[in-house]
Length: 137
Length: 373
Image (cartoon, rainbow over all chains, first blue to last red; front, side):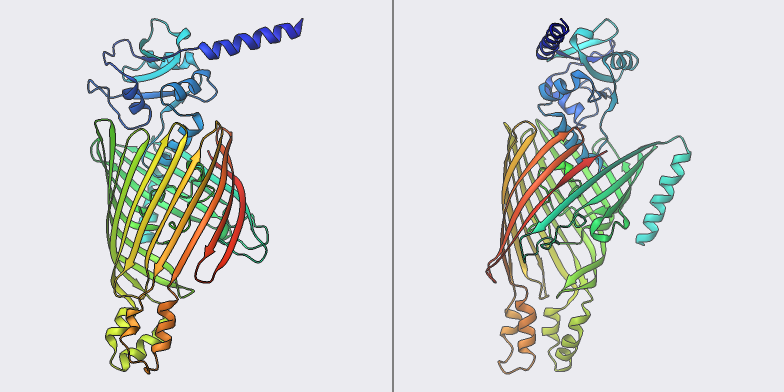
């Protein structure tokens, strides 16, 4: 009986990761439009402003959050290890600092809802009216 | 001068911890072991297994002082130096505009594509950077560096201008000698897009090396009226130049890196050095096997002694010194990187170097872990 539960649960989780969508979110007042190239620019430290000229503060999920690996692979086109290698090149040469990391979708939503310059991402299923979705992947 | 810079940077880094400034502490480490084949020596290894030679630990403290000013200090302990901690970097950063940034202090000399982070093994796939190319020394300079980064449509342009001086030691005719490079001026430019990047570097400076083992010969030449020959041998404010070009391709999990460098020092017995490498790899999830080929070819300057009379008594001595600069070496490497942990990579690499002039071969097996924290 327990085995059956484990199997169903595993199947559910696997299905969930396979079909989970990542929603890139900003503050509801943010009118900037963003495509994948623009988002990549902000999350790799190659740009610091939205296309309307306002300052952008990217926020990352920590590696323990499920949406992090999806965001790295679907949006940035890299594995989380590759992104870590990328940032270590910049950090240890004084050329850049990686985005601040938050531990969960809930923390991310709260941080983005509280900061007009913030840009982050969460599991699309966790989106609510406190944030605005600019892209889904 | 160097000490003053370091003291200033450290003092500022310490002061800020008591203020409200934000302090970031990061680090990286490599724990590596290697063993050359019986009777061989390569990259500091012998045929006895060694855990110290390429192991290192580093801590970096970066403090944002606000108002676009920050200070960074990196302390590194290398196994090769008995883990004595040394300041590898210590500099101030001032963000002039969104595109222009100024660093001042002790910096890494930007010769190669991987110069800036060659000690951060986690940042690249090899177990070590290709030594046929990454062998010049003069790794750090005291000075200023101006960076300009901008986007050109879908490409990123990074320009670095550097001014400064080197004051340290280099190996000349087998012994460490005090060396200075003054008036270093250089520029590097990297143009990159998603999967391709091209980098060029040119640096020049006035090279002086106090090679005491050469002094008796130089004095003797001067005494017999051949001061001009002495000047062609010694390093006395002689113009040194470095040219490098690098190419990087990373697409659909195929990886290719190549670099070529040319180094020379005018009016010295230092050989004109040409070296390059080509590396190919393929990413299979967490596994990245790679193969690379390196070549280092140094052309000595027999013209220094060619004009001397055949019976001139110092001629054989000069010929020996000049001809010691001939070098022709090829190396094959086969290796694997395995990302077994989010912050650590396991690596193993086999290297086989062939000296074409002596027709001897040295091979080495090394493995270890690179991590960042």
